[in-house]
Image (cartoon, rainbow over all chains, first blue to last red; front, side, top):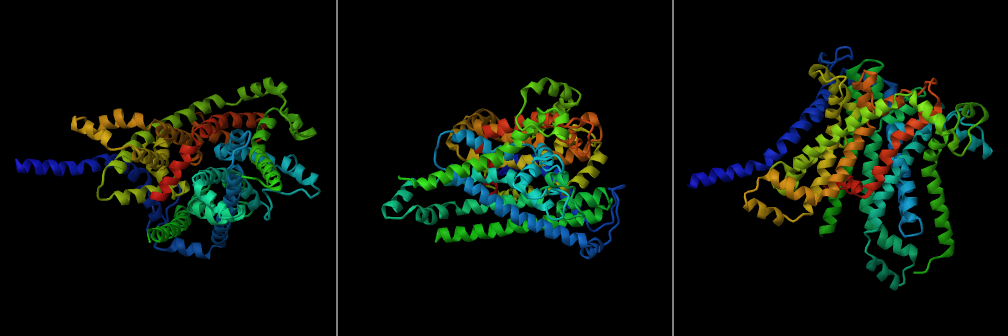
Length: 300
Length: 276
């Protein structure tokens, strides 16, 4: 009898793994195995013509990477693009959330409109922005001209291609930030704000000392998300500029595509990918260090 | 509470600017779709949508294989949803209800999937699909998409299940109801709103996906709308108004459903990153 109960317990202990097995095996096959293969490819001379075959060549791809001036351009563009989209996206999203925090007539309609950029599929968003930015007939240049400035080569000039892409990105990302920050703002307990006001704090003081500390963790979290998305983002950039002009908007992720499918060099493409992944992991790690530090402070 | 009148005016102005920035591109998409093509390039675009051009737009759209693309898109999206929810609910249930070794590791791996750029998986998946005969097949595409949407579904459903008291299930366990039965008949009805949110996210992840579809599908008849629309870029045979009309048709379902479940989506995406 005793043995029977023991084995029953042991069997029950396996129940969680029975649940987890199939989904995790799935991710193993379709996420982590390909990821591992891609990382391995960065140490081989695999070509697109024969993607299942390649010889080990050690660090040669990485050696090629650090002598390639495009690599430094890509690294620079990725970091710049990520930083600026986080700053502008989070700032605009937070400002929107602050403006939308208190009820007013028509708020739900305004809220719906503000979310458009986030809800529209990437390819559709790209098509409309391509038309807005169009050189001779686009409305962006009409507006610029109306304001008394010279026409701009939005997507084809070295100076404007990246800012143009960033405008589209902020248009897409700020609504999401707004949604998240709005939820955070509305969870600030009204009694605490009220108490501060009774103590004589003005609006700015209440914001700085009550509201801001309450929503800061959320702001950090959403910054992490926006940063990781910026490092990952492919479609918008690839379809708007194709990484050009002269590679000036080719982030690491776009460079994976160009190296693999235009130069057929899967080894070098994988090396670009490895650097991109490392960058994304670094951002995530920084976030978790902050998170843990805050958890410690909170528990004291 | 009294409000500073200057502050109130500034707030209204700010909201107006935000509405214009956020809404204008969509407005412009509709306006362009309802312009005659010769206006767009020669006499200049009429800034307001001209509904009288609707019959012409429909005629132009009929010349584009938009229906075929939408059917393919729908199939990919539906497949992605079914598979993501099936696997995601099982995984979410396990993470919510059981304490076991490796639980933290699984949470970490799920978080990792949200950091990996899709572009990084294109080539290995391509090579794998060649061997498995899944290249140029909607099925292969679904399998690739689910890798990214399954973890999100699992996070959302785990969060929802955490909010349900375990006692409800315990009575069923005592009555010897199998776990899968509990999941389908007791847990699912209680988390219906979250299931709907997870379904919308997975569906539109599949609906919007471009990179995998553009790489894995060679056959034009299999193209989803995203790939079909992208093929218009740099090509001037199709009238621009038809391109914008197709883009609008493609966007409307996504916008409608995202607006419907916006709050749930935010809760799901952020909880995944917090609890990692």
